Length: 79
Image (cartoon, rainbow, N blue to C red; front, side, top):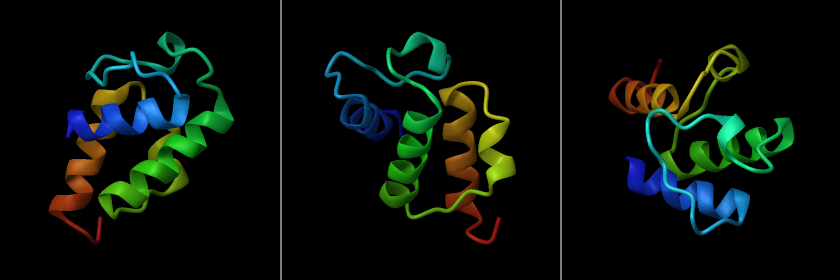
């Protein structure tokens, strides 16, 4: 999970030094603004074959919560 998220982060933010970890937040990544957040979410949806509701992504506090949401979506596609 985190290996794939690392790839997506590096692609979206064009920064090969980024490493996905559960406690990573937007404040810790240069250029992570609302537009970049949407680009990341779209990349995650495409990469993992999931879809998120706006209410689900607006409350995320860190990458660990995003990973948990992805895993929940994969385990139960209708969620």
